[in-house]
View 1 (cartoon, rainbow, N blue to C red):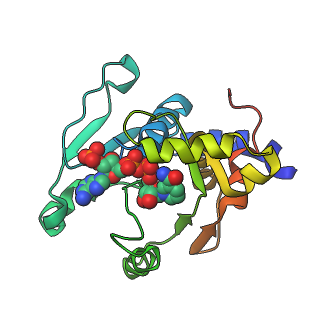
View 2: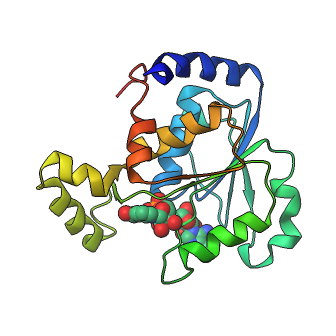
View 3: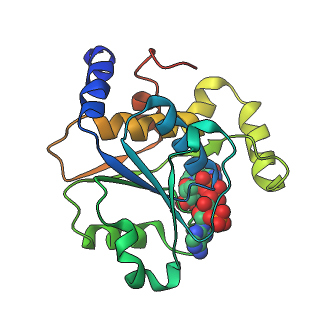
Length: 196
Ligand SMILES: NC(=O)c1ccc[n+]([C@@H]2O[C@H](COP(=O)([O-])OP(=O)(O)OC[C@H]3O[C@@H](n4cnc5c(N)ncnc54)[C@H](OP(=O)(O)O)[C@@H]3O)[C@@H](O)[C@H]2O)c1
């Protein structure tokens, strides 16, 4: 696939642009892996995590990560925390019960971003057995299924994160993109040059 060869070059071009990024939900499973991958790939010259509480990072790699604590109930008062960033990733935990996925997407549309992408993964495969026994059971179930079927309905968190980053570094003339589980698998696994 042409994109396989193009991605390392796109990534290098992107790095040269010294862009800044904010991440919402960096304490969650997806956001945590996303932050780690962003630092490992060195894609951005400034990284800010925005959350409702301060996080503790012990590793040296995180020493330049900026943190902003905001009250999500009064976001208008915290507009400054978001300003001055080129790219933003939202990994906040929302469930269809709390906020319909469609409703969230409509709200995002109203914000009139130059470009935005919505990722709709299947069941996220990760390691958080203790905190969420019900999700752990679902993951065990998917783990016992034939690979081809399971990958149609689930996806490792690291694949989602790589799809998000690969998407961010490739130019697009589309204002809005929607990536379903299959598209996430394809884009997240396209570049074999990244370490497993
Ligand atoms: N898990 C799955 O299988 C699955 C599948 C498809 C889609 N998704 C969607 O993918 C997204 C990320 O999932 P995840 O599993 O990575 O989420 P997660 O581990 O539950 O992380 C949720 C993040 O959102 C923050 N958050 C939650 N409620 C908040 C609130 N009221 N105000 C401010 N911050 C809040 C949490 O911050 P604190 O640490 O401060 O609580 C945390 O950083 C979610 O929207 C989820 O619905 C998940």
